[in-house]
Image (cartoon, rainbow over all chains, first blue to last red; front, side, top):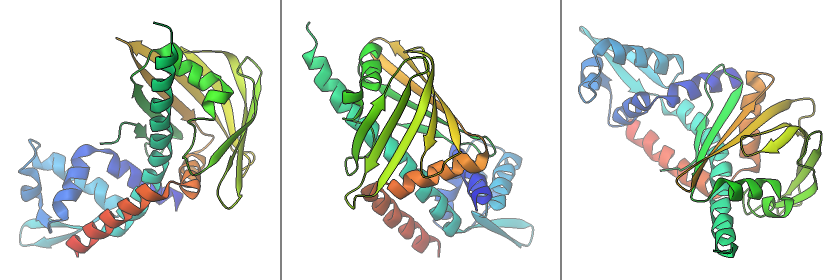
Length: 110
Length: 161
């Protein structure tokens, strides 16, 4: 389980890959369709898709000469939940630290 | 947009945290070094934080206990290496719920035009340990953000179906 989580984290770490996943929430898309909004070549998009597929975040299927990607949301949901909760721990701690620093700054003699 | 950047790369037994504060670094450092101040911000509000011992000096030890509303306790302890300074504070970290899994944490603070960038680097003994730490913070977790995220992800799943 931790090995798979690792792979999913890696897949989610890249902003282009996150945007690809977002686009796939609107429906399946071919490599050409996924490359269009990014100024990135199709081979580069294909590399990203291989990472996403290895992580189980997408599945792929073929029609004629086009290869389509389909979003598999369950692994993303699991991994993102964990990383988000860890982030939330630190986000909340640092937000509290922001408040503390503000009150300490106003205590300092000018 | 979250202000705290957290990097947990695949196959690397490390977590990198970066966060900027609108305060001079001496103040941010003091908030880390003074146990009374530390207890006022570290951890989510729903957990109480008790600093049992905190000796921020070379060879000094520390022990914290987080307690939730059900009375469940989560204790952490470790040792400082070298004299803690804003340029580098190094300590070991061990969660008592998982004894023997020790990580090494380095904290640095950099000031620029009155703002301070905090960088925390935690190195674990294995990738499994790194992942387990991320999971254990979830168990203590912050529910509200988690629930909202859950709803969002459920929405994404419905769209994708």
